[in-house]
Length: 498
Image (tube, rainbow, N blue to C red; front, side, top):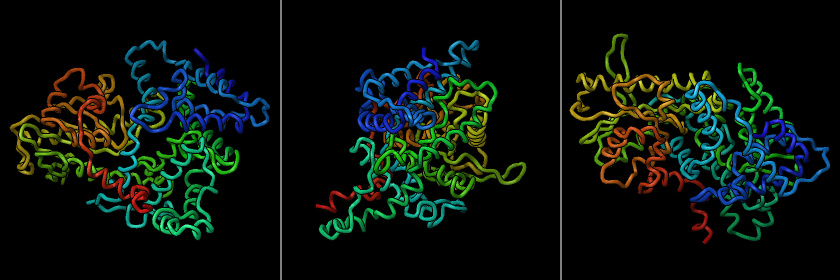
């Protein structure tokens, strides 16, 4: 085992201006998209996106530019190999259940968040925030919110994100503004004028980079200290948990002052800025805490749009009914099949940083929100079974299952250890992310309701993430995501330049 202090000393041997470009170049090779994660083909399988991002963070936060030793390929391998051997402070915990849950929370926060299907995450941004209509008043997500926040439309912002990501991957982690077409180039090639008017304004692109993507080493160091100081003040904090902390590159993934242009040591974090959760965090920073509430309202309706893609299903929205204290509301959605009723509650909650550190106390806030969703589902099931007049359109003569939909994945939420933290329910309730629901509704199987019934009855597979269960099943393209993807600037570029 390697101690965190030893690992940081390895990184501090080299000036950031030497080590960071080498990290960025490796990330551009081994963090590219593909059917199989490219890092699986890296030397020793050490060049994982989470290891490279952490090495970059340590170099930025703890590095010393006055070191004279220059980093080589073998030096980076030694650093990444040490990272893979970092000690776990809870490997000798007395309570095996607590140890297992804390370990799984940390692994999910460290690794699994880097292994999502990137295209769908980006397509979901327009599908949910642009193409989905809200049935409730919005405080900030009204016409023009994106221009107020980004200085451009959301589709343009996503297009800029795609541009940055593509150039970074093809230029060893660097984005040089001089790559953008000049006035002379526009004049020399009429296609570029058409291109820039439809897809790209260089001035807006640079403004967006400076405001939302780029930061100096000093800013990143200050941001790291500010955010992580709050976590480190918690009781029982162990420095060996440092690698699971917040990485300031998540806020600003492109570094200035290391050469011409911007250096990106973690390309996936550029992409993440334009995902729904990246947008929600930026919106909270710009508008305040009311912005996530707006996102939550749209998320509920977005899940309904996805559910309406289910073949042979009748989809019913939230039902209001009289209760002891006044008007009450059911779960968000009820999907009626011939042999199943699926009751769904949507929650736009995100995993918190303390949760990803494996802090069980910090898990209680998320668990409480998930528990409320489970209770809402259970209350709705009871009303259906008691044939409450307000629920007359929902049959009570067939099996009922529950599902809590979350915006971002909670990778181990269905595990037995995690379920012990949630209230018991009268029907099986699973937790599924938006990405999993987008796949579920398009499964190319004989019967989706039977698939869900069989899964709920399987003692082992029902504790897996839904994405794991569906991994080998055929599914069709999701038209809602396809429509959203085609709304982005670069989707039609090849045809326009032909």
